Length: 499
Image (tube, rainbow, N blue to C red; front, side, top):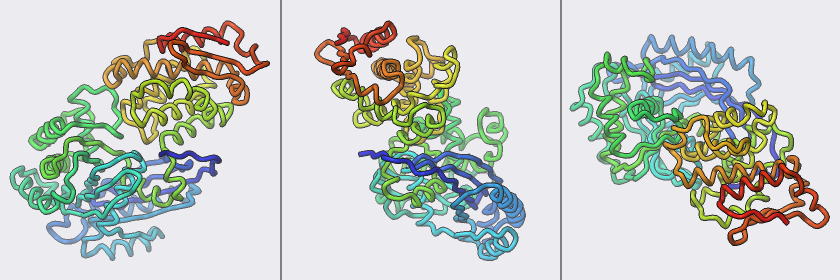
């Protein structure tokens, strides 16, 4: 069961520098409890591991590019008050003969102390990152870097089991040379074969920039309207189709495809072959893309246990509204107020029903300071693409539609095609009712949590019953209150009773 805080700690800044086989990246974060927000994200595709298979050493050109980037990152960190700065290196530095010398140069030239992660640590932090972004995730995590693939089994909030690192990164398989499909497929099959029984899984959580690019390409080919990589899902057949398509394209053909990162053309076909091999060897039926990975896993591990147990969606929605709303207690009060009515309705999201209601109530004041003529449209777009973890694409559309309904009685959202693509008519109707209930609660009480407690909302048979506590009957009087209550009753196809 998800938990939420009774009181909120002060937000803090943290930074992670990730020295990978292909890229060197700095990400500066703001941590608000369980919510993780990106403040600054910058990378340099140094290609440290480019020459490793042939020479056993880091790319000399890549070393200089990486050091230039790291000197800049150190200068950027001087301007930020990050309380926690972690610098980690992964497969290429770990395996290269000159890895220790590179880390020594980093320390001498930048003052940054590098922590060299083992393959098992790399896998574990990748799994923690997936849990940070999707707390109920279960199955197997695969983190594909430039030189290696880390596999680790996870079980939602229970954490991650021991993982394994395999030499299946694009550079280890032959990039940047042109892909030889049959030869590379045999190498992938040989490496995965001994691990197939251990990591067999229906669900596979794909971590890494190359696989995110494959997902974005699938969105393009499928004309999918919600271009958000995090928790984008592909079935087995679709994932195999896009992987085989990319593996058989020339570099020139890939360059003509809109939406692909141009710096990944030489490695993307290799990543496609690895994905196909993983699906076949592990018996994968569903691929879920995670925008969270090793870096977020490092942050997640550093959180106190009680913070880790909170739900990132509820926390994220609360923080998103905090700077714009009127009362920090409003969301929790609304959640308690509408619960008696919604808890007796058939669940459309199974165990996620209560979490989504809580998240929607935390967003009640989002847009409070916007012009009323534009508030509904702006809030809809904000929620649909909010950088908040812990929600599927269906849940994004549900919450965005509910927040649209919270601000207007109109039924046509700004992105009808998107909503229709990912949200069933029944869930759409429920979103309308939820938004209408939040609007009713806000207008009835003037968005005052203490006044909200003077009334109640319930469903009795075929009636929606809105009642006031003795002596507070005048709260229910007024044209606007009656209008809002009638809108909610209509959304639930009930008769309204105000007493």
